[in-house]
Amino acid sequence: MLKNKNIVLGVTGGIAAYRAAQIARDMSKKGAHVYCILTKNALNFITQQTMETLTGNPAVVDMFARPDKWEVEHISLAKRADVFLVAPASANFLGKMAAGVADDMLTTTVMATKAPVVIAPAMNVNMYENPVTQRNMRTLRELLGVTFVEPSVGLLACNDVGKGHIAADADIIAAVERALGKKDFAGKRVLVTAGPTREALDPVRYLTNKSSGKMGYAIAAAAARRGAAVTLISGPVALEKPDGVHRVFIESTQELYREMEARCEEQDVIIQAAAPADYRPAQVAEQKIKKTGDEPFDIHLVQNPDVAAMVGQHKRPGQILVGFAAETQNLSTNAGKKLLKKNLDFIVGNDVTRPGAGFDVDTNIVTFYDARGETSLPQLLKSEVADRILDRVLELM
Ligand code: PMT
Image (cartoon, rainbow, N blue to C red; front, side, top):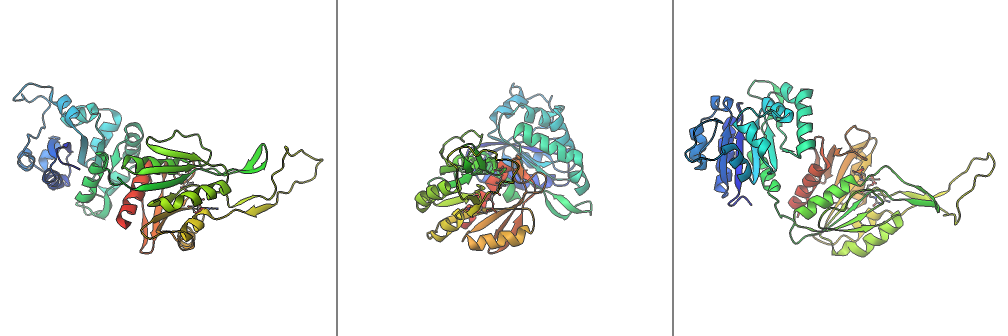
């Protein structure tokens, strides 16, 4: 993936700057052309010469140094980048970038680039958890689509324990590869379900839920971007069809059941993020139901089929089945039960009462449950959750 790609590597001032040397080396070994830009503060921790020796390219610090050959260097590096990586990124750098400050070579170049930007923050835990830093990261995600490789938890150089350690080199390089558009799902058929169902009561009324389809659409978009042939079975939502995806609309859980029954056999991966109704009105009135006096009106409901359980019963060898669990309490117990009942390879649990998680928001906070245990992710954009789910699917394949 990295062969002959131009990676601009920004290095900011922090003790984790020494890790930039290994990251640059590993990317160079994989065939990338790595161009380093160091901030003046980074020079307190690592030298220009180290980065030049490891990459075989000039490393830049000063905006106004006389270049050997004339070109506006920050613009030329900004244009040359296939991916712009900043590792480690300090709180100061995040603040400047989020505020649009361009006062050195790194901030100027990152502002001028059109390439995907990947940032691996590293700092003291209190600085990382500071709401200003968190707000800056949100701004960069939302305004510019920056991908963050979250720091890990551990004993920090300042002797505090907490989140702030730069992520593992392999995770940072994997994020760069993803940003380059890794086609790791080429040749795979992926079916995704998304959105709510509508269970008709009469010609104008129905029972439904709050699903917007955002989670499922993000998965379908990510799978298509990564090279899969994607079928998206969608309930009624107001979202654009993602590029390169075949979309089939359904209304009710029974319709979803029929579509899935017809299509599940041929799929390599099935990811069920839809929120089908568990119950439907026993009778659908042919005409609009009229108000009669002041009497209460009872609706008799019958159970809908469990689509994921049916898909689980038909699971063929080698097929990967992923479900979701939307819970308001006892997430881990309930998700564990659904994992078994629906014969899934793993289930993505979300506590839909948490701010920033679940229905009709752009982020989610999820935990993966499988036979080995559970893995909790931080609050991420649904597009990032989608990539994490697909990474996990690949591990299982
Ligand atoms: O669409 P968004 O606004 O982005 O919101 C995302 C989401 C909250 C809908 C999504 O993250 C999510 O949790 N989807 C699953 C919702 C749900 O129906 O959860 P559940 O715990 O009731 O069902 C468990 C699994 O069984 C799900 O994979 C569901 O698709 C499936 N199911 C449920 C009922 C049913 N009759 N048939 C099913 O196949």
